[in-house]
Every structure is written in structure tokens, then in C-alpha cells.
Image 1: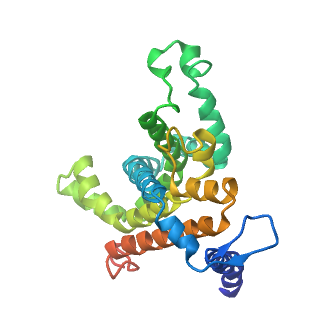
Image 2 (image 1 turned 90 degrees about the horizontal axis):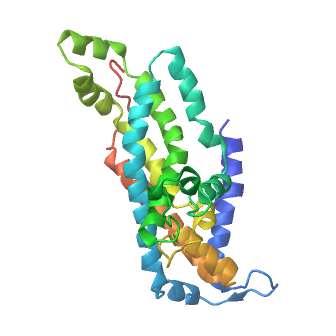
Image 3 (image 1 turned 180 degrees about the horizontal axis):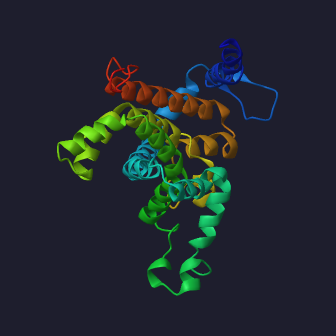
Length: 282
């Protein structure tokens, strides 16, 4: 049963990855038929570029801030919608609508809403909303983190919802007999039982944040003053605007290595017995 998935992963995951690695040792403008082997020249160009540390910093900054925004809210919302009440199920359905929208459509919508002259602030007459949200460095970075969190919190809430529903009710019943309140139950039962769910969700958040391109590109195009020029945006500009496919492929390989390293680190944090069940009696 695993063979179809393995074959599909090899064709669409492994083979393109080897192709990108091979391109990182060549010189190609992306159009001509001539591809020249240049050895480590592309890597030397990328690693000596002062823009690479900046792009890495922006990438990690977006990753860290979006994780800090998404994780607590996703856990709280996941716990809330895990309750077996009808109206909560309806709210859960409405809440997941952002997952159905493309990042480009979301970025265009927010770009229009945040326009200082014709957007939401001007329409409602609120001065604090009439700022140049995408024209100032700190504000633009904050907008990117906010929009990313707005779109992906529903997805991670769904993961936490499933995790909460796997916690045995007998644990909460025993805690109530001992006199533990809701807050104490949350910190003493819910959070510890969600340990591996948090690691799984965090891995998806961290590795997924490395691929944010279309949303950032439509919102800010990496600006202002490269304030939101993440590694994926840097790769696109190097490859398709500067027509340097070799260095762009080297950046892509760096992205893959960073993602693998972070995923392994998070798995390590989960402990050696990460696959074992934490459920009572399991």
C-alpha cells in the first residue's frame, strides 16, 4: 500500500530536489538551451552575498513571530471547539474558511483593506488604521506575521482539536474530584497531554514558514528596504529577476537544509519515544 505514495514522493519530491542540487553547480539564465558547469561558483556567490544573512534573519524572524502568535491561540481555540456542543461545531466550520482561500487572494484583499487612502481605515474614519502599513519596515513585517497567522491558525486549531479529543475524560473527572478548576486542569492535564501535538504543529509551522513566498510577494514584494525579503523571496528575485538559476538553486538547497535541520531539531525535542502514546492505559 505504501508503494504508490513512495513512487509519487520520488517523482515529485526526490527527483526535482536532485535537479535543483545539480543546477546549483551550473550557470543558466533559465531560458537558453546552454547550461554550463561552473563548479562551486554559484555557492561562492551566494555564500559571499551580504543579502543572504539578512534574508535568513527575516525568515527566522517571521518564523518565530508567527509561531509565537499561532501556537497559544491555536491551542486555546482547539480546546474551545473540542467541546461537544452544537454551536461550537458551527463556529468551527465558519472558522476554517481562511483555509479555503489562496495566499495570493488573501494578500490582495489585505493589501486593499490596509491601503491608507482607500482602505478600511479611510472608509471607517479610524486614524490608527490609516497608517502606511506596507510602506514602513516594522509595520510591513507585522502585517506579514498577522496575515500568516490569520490564515493558518484555523489549520493548527484543527490539529489541537483532534489532540484534545484524544485525552481520556476520566483524567478530567479525577481532577474535578480532587477539586482542580478549569485553569488547573488546562495546565496540569491538557497541555502535558498535547506535548507531541504541539511538536507536530510546531514542525508544520516552522518548516511551512520557509515556503512563504506568494503572500509576501503580493503584499510587499520583499520591501520596504528589504524588510520582508525572506529567503524564498530572495530565491525568486535571484532566479527569475536576475536570471541567475545557479545561485537561485543554491538558495533553494539552503532552504531545504534549514527546513530539514529544524524538523530534526524539533523531533529531537520530542524525545526518543516520540511515537509512543501518552494516553492513559496505552
